[in-house]
Structures are given as C-alpha cells and as structure tokens.
Length: 180
Image (cartoon, rainbow, N blue to C red; front, side, top):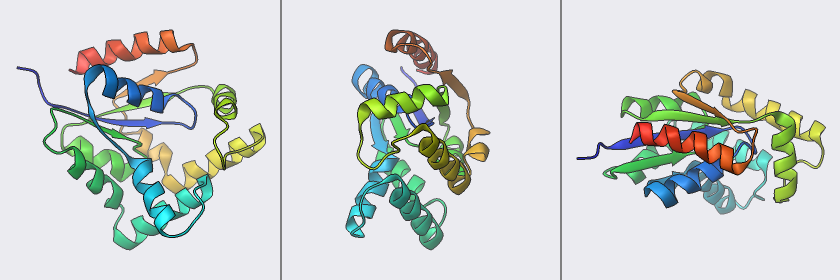
C-alpha cells in the first residue's frame, strides 16, 4: 500500500515552482491547491487589480483580520483526504508550520536572481517588473512582508533550478520518488 503524501511547495519568483507543481499533478496525480489562486480570487472580489503589490497587501490584510493561518487552513481543508496532496505556494512561516504538523514535507525551488528575472520577462505576465532593479526591489519587499527567510527554515528539501528543464525534472523526479 502506498503511503499518504503531503507536500508544501515554496519557490522564489521565477524559480520553476509552477513547473514543479504542474509536474506533480500530471505525472504523480497530486490533488493541488494553489495558494496564490486563493489570494487572487479575494483580490478580484475586493475590486483590486491583480498585481504583485495588491496580492501582497491582500494577503497581509486577510492574515491580520482572520489570523496568520487563514490561507493555509483553507488550503489544507481542500486537500484533506487526498492520497497525494499538494499545497502550492507556501509563503509565510505559518504556511509551513501547519502542513508540517500534518506530516508534510516542504520543498523549496530556487534559482539565481538574474535567471529568475529573465524567466519572468519571457513570461510577460501583466503587473510584474520591467527591469532587474525593480525585480530585486519587489522581491526584497516580498521577503520582508512575508518573512520568507523564516519560512525557509522549515524547508525539508531544496532544489536549485539553474539548468534546463530536463536537468530540473531529473532532480525533482528523484526527490519525489523518494517521498512517495
């Protein structure tokens, strides 16, 4: 019998976290909740433009109003009962603490800042930085607002994604097979 697996996925902007998340869903049939989608839905409901700044402010507002665990408790409820659960978008320390108490493994995907900026530029997602300087400022704001350095202390596994997609999947696949 296969064991129950819960993964919390965290990644710096443009590191490949979404690629990793999609891979888990497609190849390993994980039931996924994307934390950012929870925040985006609330941001739209509040009548705000969906951009990095408003998403961060919405998170802060709801965490202050309903508790630091508001988003993660919502996400955990959505994957309850799944044989393989995935919480995509662990951000603040509480987002790691609650799943870890439920037996989750937290995986960090990272890459060099310059490479991540270039990836984001290629994506052309609306509302994101136009220059590397803006990118670094937005990332610094995110690290401070969300206390990401503290969240990183809860990471069980870290994958550096500075290579191509094939190299990334080779590393990632090896880790996931170990966990499942």
